[in-house]
Length: 341
Image (cartoon, rainbow, N blue to C red):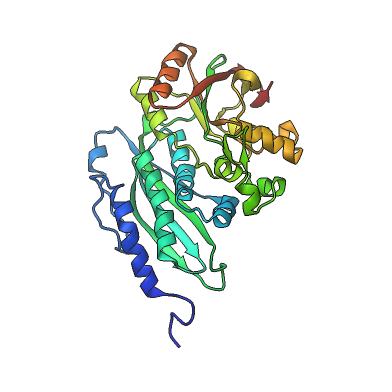
C-alpha cells in the first residue's frame, strides 16, 4: 500500500505546479521576493513607506455553486477570475490597492491539466487587478470530493494610506450615487439559478437570441474586476465617499453597508437597462422583482457615492478605464437604508 493507492498522486501534484508556473509568472510584481513552490510567499513593503500610515486591507472568498456549471460544461479557464474578483473588489471598496493573492483548490483527484487551467483563470484575474499570485495550495482529497469536482477559494491582501480609506463617514445629503455595470450574474445566487434552469448540457448549450450567446456562456461570464476603474477615479483627483460591491444579498443587503447612520440611498431602477439574463431568470423562475434585487446585482456590480461636483469627472474616469457607468440615484438625510423606485 502507498499514498497513490490511497488516492493521492504526489507526482500529479508536481506536474500541476510545473504546468501552472507559466501562468503564475505573468502576475509577478517587483515586490515579490520568493518563487512558486516555497512554503510561503514574501512581499516587500519598501515602496509603501512614503504613505503616511500604510494600512493593510484583506479579503477572502470563494466561487460558490457557480462551480457546478463549470463541472457540467467542463470549462475551467475563467472560474479563477471569479475567485480573484470576489476578493479584490472588496479590497478596492475600501480604497485599497490589491498587492498579492493566494488560491486554494481542493479536489477529489488531481488532474494536472485541469488544475493548470483553473490557475490560468486565477492568474488572469490577478493580471486584471495588478495583484501578484505568490502562492497557493492544491489539496487532493479522495473520498471527500467526487473525482471530477473541486472547490476554489482565495485570499488577497492590499494596502491603502489610512487617510484614504473609504468609510462613508463623510456622506452628505444629495451626494450622487454612481453604478458601474456588471458583466452579468457574477458569482452569487447560483443556488437559485440551479433551481430556475435545468442543469444539463443541452439546456446550458442552448443559444438564446435575447442573450446573444448560450445560457451557459451567459452564466459562466466571469465576475467584473473593478480595481482599474476605482484607481482611475482616484487618479482623477476624486474622493470616493462610500463604496459597495453588489454581491450576495443584492442591493438591499449591500448598499446599506456603505452608509452611516442617518443616511439613506435612493436608487432609480430605470436609470439603466437591466441585462437580459436577469429578465430571463425572473421570467423563467417566476422570481418576484424584490427578490431579484435582494439576490442579484441586476446589472450593477459596484455602487459608489461622490460629491455632486465630482459626478462628471467620476463618470469620465470610469469610462476611460473601459467600464460603463450610470448615475443611478442620490443620498438623502433619512433612516439608514435603501429605497429602489
